[in-house]
Length: 110
Length: 117
Image (cartoon, rainbow over all chains, first blue to last red; front, side, top):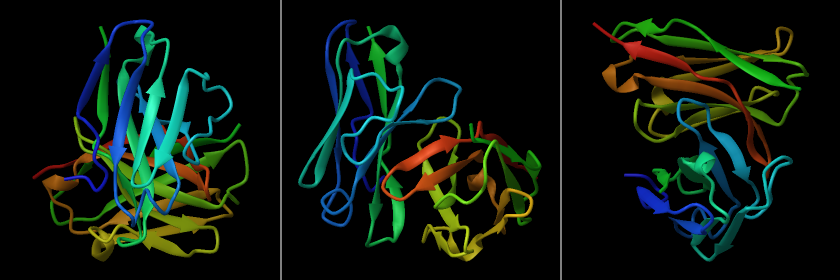
């Protein structure tokens, strides 16, 4: 059972937009930055979004992040087949004094 | 460009200590902090802990009693030791660079560790 809750799967057709949610609490998401990581099959995770809504250099602007209260979301527009991956949210949790991850969402581009 | 590479035994016996090293290349090791993160096959990510260049550490409470991290700035390396391993510790182990507010921006490719009897 992960501290941050994500839907296990999501799917959408190419060109469309998908949103992946991440639910937490006042000890993590409400109080700290949210990060999103993309893990393509067989590879290490890659930082996709930092500080709730900032994109590292090289990440397309099709990817966006937002946060409100104890929830965060990752949006991917103009879906492409290469976006098929597992997506994880993460944040610091001050009750645990630890970085916590969501359980991950497997995105399928139909 | 900074790169990370994990190294260490791929097989560890139950009750023994798992030892991994992460070598930092392409830049100095004086980042904010360095973390270890693991992922059992087919499952999600679990943060193990982090170490600052000063040697200060933070560990996941669920693993704290068994984890020790260290850093050797002269070798541009940092290390993980996990004692009393069981099959539940079998996983891909990743090292990653962390910067305050900026997340884990650089990851190693990961190394698979299997606990077998």
